[in-house]
Length: 219
Picture 1 (spheres, rainbow, N blue to C red):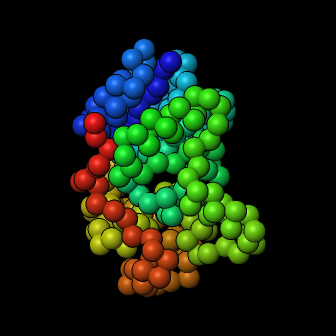
Picture 2: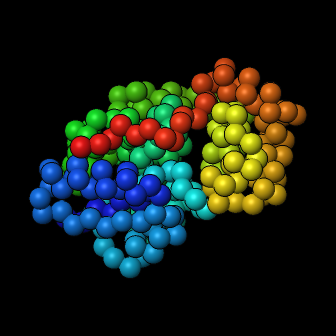
Picture 3: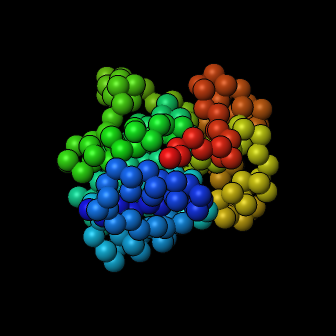
C-alpha cells in the first residue's frame, strides 16, 4: 500500500504520516511539497492514494489534481484543505477528486477516507453529497464566483480575507503583476469594481478563507 502526501508544510506531512502509519503498519509513504513535485512523483511511481493539499506555492493543488486525472485517471486523489467544504468541495469533486477533507477533521476521519478510497469508493460527506445534489438540480444557475478559474477563486478568497496583493503573491509564489492581473479578471468576471464589493459578496456567500496557521489534523 503506497500513499503520497502532498503539502507544502513539513509539519503537516509528518503529522499525516504518523496518523496513517499508526493505522496501516505496512504502508509506504511518499512526500511532496509542491504541485510540481507531486506530479513528478505520480509520473515516476505507482500510488494507491494521493492526499493533496489545495494551496501550495506556485501551481495550485487544483492544477495538480487536473493533471493527475488526465495522466493517471485511476489514481484516487483525496483533497485536504484548510478551506471549508462549502467553498471547495463541489469544485474539487467536479475536477476529479475522490474526496474532500478539511484539515480540522479528526484523525479517524482521515483514516476512514483513505480506507474508502483504497476500497474503490469515494469519500463524500453527507453535507457535500447534498451540495452536489443541489448543484445537479440547479445546474443552470451559475453564481458569479463559480465563473472563476481555480486560481482566481483561490485569490478571491485571499483578497476577501484582507490579504494585500504582495501577501497573495508571496503565498502562491507568483509575481505581484500576475496577482494584479488575476484581480482585474476576477472583478471583470464578477461584474464588480472594488475589493469592498468582493468582500461584501464573500460575506453574503460565506466565502472567507481561513487562517493557515492552525491545523487540527494531528496524532
